[in-house]
Image 1 (tube, one colour):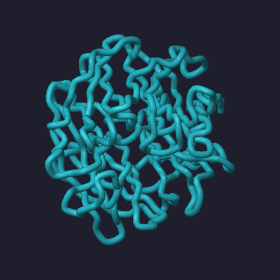
Image 2: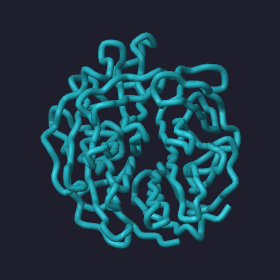
Image 3: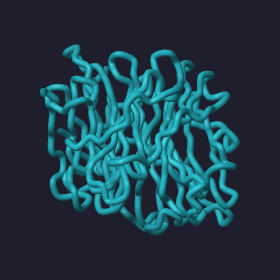
Length: 341
C-alpha cells in the first residue's frame, strides 16, 4: 500500500475538499477537487485537476478548471467521466445551480490537458421544480452500451425549503446516450421508511450490466442506502438500506472492475463509523454489493469524503480521501495482491 499527500492547506487555499477521480482509457489518473478559500460549502473556491501518467506515483501541477467569481463564488461538485470517443467530460455547478448559478459542461480531448469552453446544460436538470442541485460528487460512468450516467441530488421545491438549503433531498441520475450532446433526467428515488433524505451518491456498473447506486442518507441515519437498475436511469428495481455499511453521514465511494485474476469486484470506501469522520475503510463485494467479503482499514484515525478509482490494466485501486474536513487530501494505491478476499 502506497500513500501520498496530494494537497495540504496552504496560503492559496484554506481547504481542499470534495474529491473526484477517473482513470482514462489510456491509463491516465485524473483527480479533481474544490479548492476553497474558506470552510463553508458556499465559500469562494476554484476547481482544480491534477494528472498522473505513472499510476499515481507522481502528479503534474494543478490545472484550474473553474474559478469562483464575485457573482458566483461557489463552483462545486466536479465529476468526471469518459465517452465512447475517448473524450473526458466534466460536469459542475455554480452556487449549487441556484441564485442564477448554472450547471456547466466541459470536454477534454487530450486526457485532461486542455478543455473546451463551458456549455450551459442547466435546462436539462429540471430547474423549474428544484432548488439546490449537485452531481455525485465523485465520478460518473460509461456503461457497456455507451451511455454516460452520473448521480445527482436535488432539493425539490415542493418542500418549501430555503433556496440555499441542502435538504430534504432526493436522488436520481443524469444520463446521455449521445456522448454528452444531450442530457436527460432519469428515474428519481425519494425518501421512504428507513431511507430518509438520500443525497450524495456514487455509481458503478456491475458484471451483469446492471447499475448500482450507493447513497448517503440524512435524518440521523448511520448506515448507507443502495439501489440496483437495469440501465441506471429508467427504473430502480430495489432501493433499500445496507445495514452492513456504517456511516457518519458523509460521502462514500464505489467503483467496479475486473482484476487480473479474473474476478469482478465492486468496491466501496467510506468512514466506517457511526459517529465522526474517521476510520477510512475499503470493502469489496464479489456478488454485486449484496454482501462484503473484503475489508481493509486504510486510516483508522482520520477521514472525510472518500473517492475511488480502479485501474484494471495496472491491477490497482486508488483511494482519495480527506483529512480533517479538507485540511489535506491523501491518495492510497492498493495493488491486486493486497485485495485478496
